[in-house]
Amino acid sequence: QVTLVESGGGLVQAGGSLRLSCVASERTLSNYVVGWFRQAPGKEREFVAGINGGGGVTSYRESVKGRFNISRDNAKNTAYLQMNSLKPEDTAVYYCAVKRALGIAVRATSYDYWGQGTQVTVSS
Image (cartoon, rainbow, N blue to C red; front, side):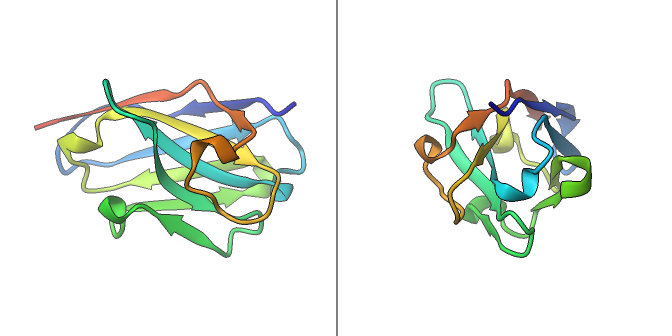
């Protein structure tokens, strides 16, 4: 069982930045792929970004490329999502998730453990 705790969400104006953190209870986080997802009211949960165990491979949804950056510090059991140039359409609850199997996946059902989520609200 892996427990994930997200933090760093909040209210920010359009064009602003936030950095989300995801701390894992698992001491060998390097064994897991980390994904960040988001879910806006009335919409399905969607993939935002993912990073492989070693941190050398990343993937992003098209709409956040060039604005968001995913990273991880396995020594601290922590993953991050740096979000810049935020837009109102980025407003959602953001979740981190991990999966044991190799390879970044965009489907939420591929992930084994989830955090409780952190709200990000971008005002126009």
